[in-house]
Image (cartoon, rainbow, N blue to C red):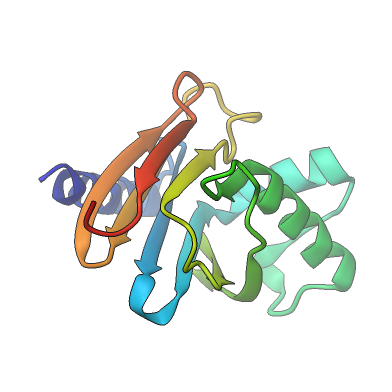
Length: 170
């Protein structure tokens, strides 16, 4: 039920934001696929907010409105930021290595797609989501978790930037 509420809430925020962008929100869709031994996830942000943050933090000028490709420096800056702000850790509190797959822009939003292979030994997953928290005090980060068919929703913010979930049916 909480997952459905967060999905509806995130859709509402994105619809409102298309017109004026009055909220600071991100959405991560995290899909744990134990039968395939992998985790797939996507990160969705307002591209103007991400541009501002990357420009300030990494001195890398981005302009997603007028480009369809990223330079190596742009991609490295963005991935460095995403990998330091959204972290998945295994049962031993060791960060998992995510493989960047692709990105796309839709309206005012930018999506990044990742995959983590070989998760067979992981029973607990720590999720740290600090996306955009260093730029906006009112930032809300929503996470929709599909844990082997069971959906859950989480909200991350400055006070609560981490959750631990059990993988599987345990």
